[in-house]
Image 1 (tube, rainbow over the protein chains, first blue to last red):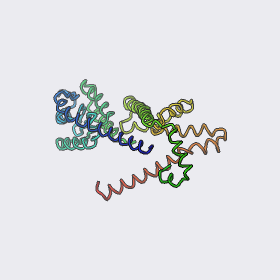
Image 2 (image 1 turned 60 degrees about the vertical axis):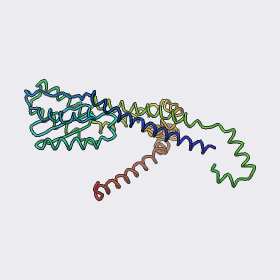
Image 3 (image 1 turned 60 degrees about the horizontal axis):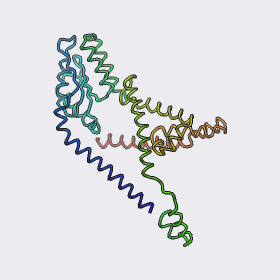
Image 4 (image 1 turned 90 degrees about the vertical axis):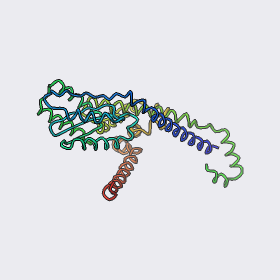
Length: 160
Length: 159
């Protein structure tokens, strides 16, 4: 009797889980189209007349914002380095590594003269947000910017 | 007792089995599951809050913030176990408090408290890892096996 009950419980849980899974999956597909129209990507394009030309990172932002799963982009560049941090929609985070690979490949194809670094880490996103503000207000020197970008790149590669 | 074993029992014992089964208090499995889900989920929520805190206010990335988070959670559990609060939560939630990393902290410190009357070396020192020791041994061993498989797959499988 007890074993039968256990079996019923296991089946119930499995049905419940699969039902939930299907529900969200179908919801996603029906909602994505609506979301696409309303979705706003958090971007701060930096005006051209700054001490360091930020045109490459602005261009990278324009390329990346076409993707549906991207909700926010921050980035900065020196003459040969480009670092971009993106935020991904929460329900797409299961395919995080795949999305990162795709976006990274696309950027590398578009910026062949640059050493491109793409990350999806929240910390790097926050750091780049601060850096963008500094560039915007012209309160950072070109040499310092290079050092700062190196520091952020190193931070993004830390494993432990 | 499994059905096969029951068939081999003498008739009186079989009768007793059915008698006690009718009167046995049924385990509230579903209720226990829900309790474990809610309390375990809350512990994970606290863990996520701590991770976010480390990301925002310290120099940790999403990848590296895991280590201090685990340390903080284990420290909090040890404190709560020492104060006798974690045992009560454990009684209420069961596996919900044992499965997250906090369960590990509880297993270490509760054994230490239990054996403190036997002295610091032969009591606390030797009994502290009575429950948590196997977790470490088999955790390290399975990590080693997984790493070995991964290395083989990457080196020769071309993954």
